[in-house]
Image (cartoon, rainbow, N blue to C red; front, side, top):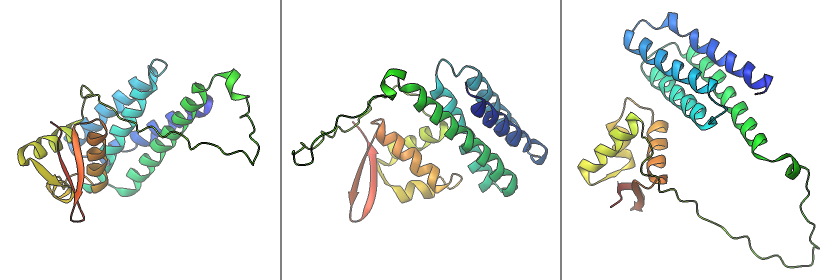
Length: 197
């Protein structure tokens, strides 16, 4: 664990803690406390799985986004989000740095003469069929809404969940499509989603 990562973690926790005096609503206070506790616990356990820490950062970011739409102090929220995203970036950089074995980092790519024709690289479509992945509450609600209506336009889903930002709804739809629970298709310049069968 690098000093930079530890410093970014401490800064993000400090910025998040500065929100507590501004929150008068017990619901948001408890929600922030629980998400922050999970974030802290996952950071302490990050040696086992950095993915859980990144997931906690995403959950806190979603909560900050939701609080922004609920009318909380935008300056405090922006500074907390900034600290959180700086930590996430440092975490991703550290994970990327540790993923490359030391012996491979120094190796150079073989050089190819300019006149030789290179075959096109093989493009592999990444598919994830992990339907057992735990969904967050927003994703479960979106899935339930689409299940009830058989198919839904992206715009309808965004309008239905107006308590969430448009970006959050689109991110959840993309994730549900990526893990194979939804099928995405376009028709008459509109994007539709339906359940995979």
